[in-house]
Image 1 (cartoon, chains in turn blue, red):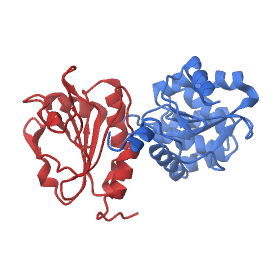
Image 2 (spheres, each protein chain N blue to C red):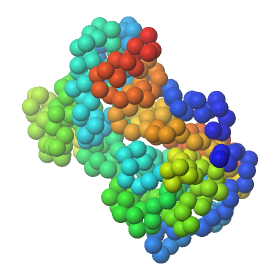
Image 3 (cartoon, each protein chain N blue to C red):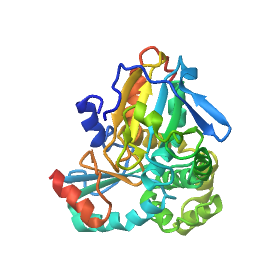
Length: 184
Length: 159
């Protein structure tokens, strides 16, 4: 209720911060479909959505640009913020997506010591990685992601935006594809 | 029944925030108040919504805003729910008489015996500045609240 216009916007919110240089993306920037996910590495639903997103990327190949933004719910997921910082620290060494995949496939092992083990397994410069973790170097970046999500109407994790509009449907492959078809 | 609209005086109420403490709305004059009515503790969507607000508390504090979750659950139920989710803001028990405050605000759903998922932001004078009822099953997020807080004109916003 309230004014109908604002109500309609709140029901179907739009991404307020388009994909930019600060984002980690995969896929061609000219793709017809852009998908932005706001996720939390310790969230079990995001963990379930992770292979679905990979399948979607395989399915759409050159037609899809995908970006992942951090939305750690740190009060219910005690390791989520550290894990997000770890992904960024790996990203600083050019290995964001490898760490991203590892975090989602090791959701039960995200304590600080586990993060170092993951970093070692992809041959990161461990000293630099550990320093970035303890100094929380990329916490401001994670926080910025979080706030762009809040302002775009992220209401839980995972939340997907398809071509800039919040996807209110499910996040199985069919529902995401339906959401994509609806925007084309 | 339709939700009280912007410009209406927010009806005062006193509800239990814990088994032995109460909150009276009019005690919060001078600052914005966010009232987040939701159907029930423990249901998945509410849990997401309250977890989200919990994370955004520092943003709400920038506006000196007080946040209250309100449902028909008993104070003991709220206590267990808040502890389990590590919530740092009060949940008010609209338990007895059941749903009376939700009814006063026009957001009680008589068919299901619970309140709708509705948001109200009041200004420092206790007037409703913004209200919104989310569709069934949709978590409304926090953007509408922040936009409303930004437009509560006479509240200073330190960056």
